[in-house]
Length: 221
Image (cartoon, rainbow, N blue to C red; front, side, top):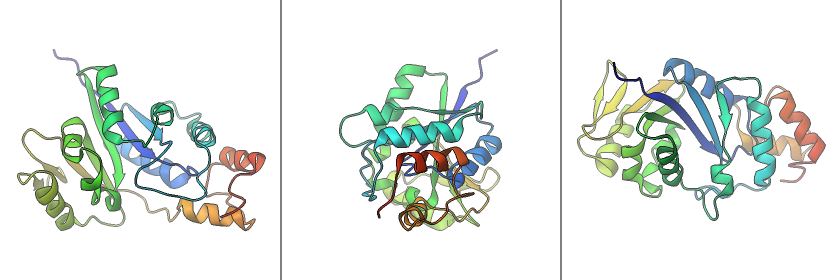
């Protein structure tokens, strides 16, 4: 009997800082997609974002590790933090495939807004040979926009399967659409609150809140 593939979920981003919205999305997708693990990939130099202030990557790694501590199937990797220059998703996917072998099944978790811009990512078409995508949104997906993007930018043969709630294409990885609980939290708002001395309790894990305070992060916008 063939061995089942190991299903690894991936979440990339600056995590500047990580918040409960990130964690809730990871929790729900891990459950609905039956993932074995979820790996968080804090980026050192994200090519598509110029967030200011961007906390040092050592702080963002530390906060992400604090946030997932105690959740057995959540892990943090520093592979993008160690990389020189911009952090490209395609490089991380290749590195994971090389280190884990053919038994690894990757699921890249991404919000719909970012996914619709994926054609601007490095080697965008190559990404769909390396990983499935799990596109999250709330309260509903714009299926027409996703279909148009896939057909025009990635591969014209992608078609939507209503039973799977996914887009499929022979020779390419699937794009799953999954709804998640709406938590109206964003890192930009958290940084703004911290800069003016407002509380961010219940927006970030308490361990992260204490770390931010102890290290004086985000005191200025």
